[in-house]
Amino acid sequence: MVKDRGGRVDGCASVGNPVCSNIRAVQYSRYKSRHTVDNNLGRPAPHGHIREILVRKGAELMKSQKMFLLVAFTILLFLLTGCQRDYTIEITYVSELAPGALADLQAQSSGTSITIAQFIDSRDTIGVAGAKNPIGNVAVPYNSTKPVAEVVRDTLAEEFAKVGFEVDTMGLWNLQPETLKNVATTLAMGGEVKVFWAENRPTPGTYSTGGSGFSNVRIRFVLANPASEEIIWQGEIEGGVTRSALFRTPDLAEMLEKAFSQVIDRLLTNPELIRALGSV
Image (cartoon, rainbow, N blue to C red; front, side):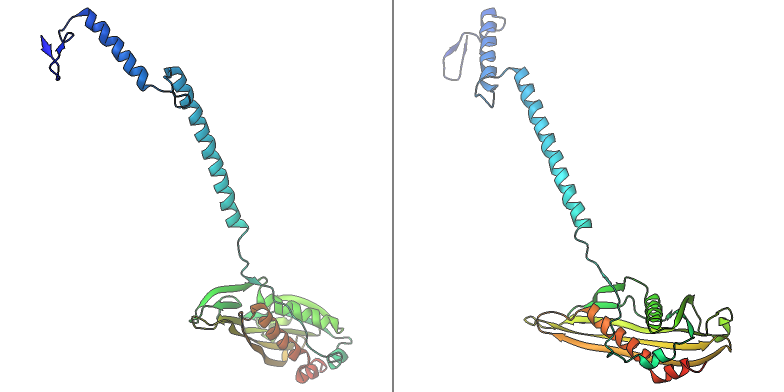
């Protein structure tokens, strides 16, 4: 005879008792039923129903994961394409000359043709502008939407054509007049871009606002007579501005436009250039 922990006699402690075996089988079945519960209904759930629940939950999880991946991909695509900042500047010429200021230049245009060559770019800076941080380092460089050497050539070609010259354009010229033998126009002009730069920076200081900036453009111009293989005029012209603002940093494109326009205006009204144009 075997007693349990309470001192009571355990009638089913003996091995091989068939009655006890049946009793224990029933007890185990009841125990298993009590611990297998349908989460939705709160009652014992058959194994087939449990599998259905697991399959349904798995399908819902996969659907949620697909939706998450779709949203994440959409956000990433927006960040890569929709939020990219444009770090280029379109260089333009806006004349500040008074009406009639080009009368002397126009007087030399009758029967005169000129070829404008692409200018040599000998700058030692990367890009055409830079936004600096308060300590003076270039934090954001800007490039021209069109190569500076081509901008100068195309601007001059347009302005000479406006005052009556017959204008042609060509590629890069090395500024040696003997290399112009195949140029059929009366005159040829090229040159060298030495400086083409603008920058701005915020005012240093924790509580400071605003900023300052400047621009500087310096170009060498060369005018040659292809027939005589001679340089008949050359000169270096410079332009530039300084700016300051109270609640922002000065605009890089505006400063660069002003400096470039000053150079072109001073070229087109240069008395020595005008005399050279009329000497052939």
